Image (cartoon, rainbow, N blue to C red):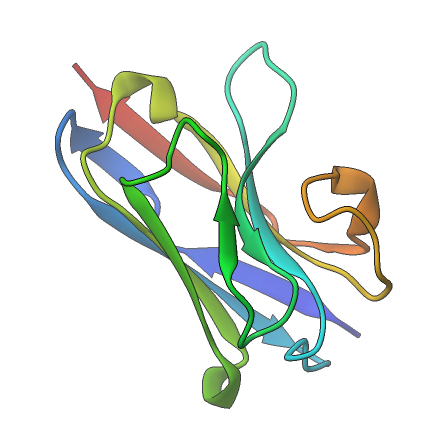
Length: 124
């Protein structure tokens, strides 16, 4: 059974930093897309950052470019999201997702496996 387990969310003041982690169990994803999405209250889930394979380049949503850095670690079967210069509009539940087939990186419909989500709250 495949599981994605996220950690690292929390409450932080604007301008602060958090580092999210997502560890996969039951399957390796080094050749597959892994991505971070987020969902703010009352809004649809949106793409944040992701890569098509572990050694590929990371793509970012315009809203986080220059502030967030995504990375992957094959040895740990894990994915990370370093979030700096956080803003109140970054508040939401952050989900990691992993694909089993090829599809648009930024579409949630590409992803078969999802973590439970971790809450990020940025106070002003």
